[in-house]
Length: 178
Image (cartoon, rainbow, N blue to C red):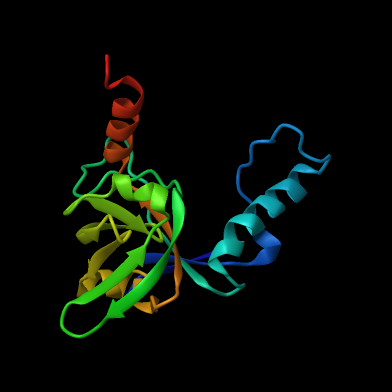
């Protein structure tokens, strides 16, 4: 991954470079005897495969908040909970994208709740749990400062569900009947 800072929109962009695809990796039990470098490369290639990312594709990166950071938005952690598929993109008037998440994630979504799409924290504008889709609105600032203006019907996108919703669902599922 090569990093590039664009001062015109105060945004970092990353370009995938297969020669540089590394991240921290935990060695799984029963893993073949690979070098750490080879294991990291295979892990990153496996994460990129579902999105069909190619060398040179742009991806979004936001600086992490610290405990001293004034928060002015949603709480996100940078975890990928699943990969969704864009069903429709409406660019007439208010930009909206309808996304079908994996069915097991829909329980974490709520109207006006938060969702991260491709690492961008957004508000859920509409949701249909029975048909398993949600919609996001893309305002001009989001379109200008992120890669989301390139979404098309059929695009696959990384999703991170609301951290607080995940905690509540987990607690209720495992401890709610105490």
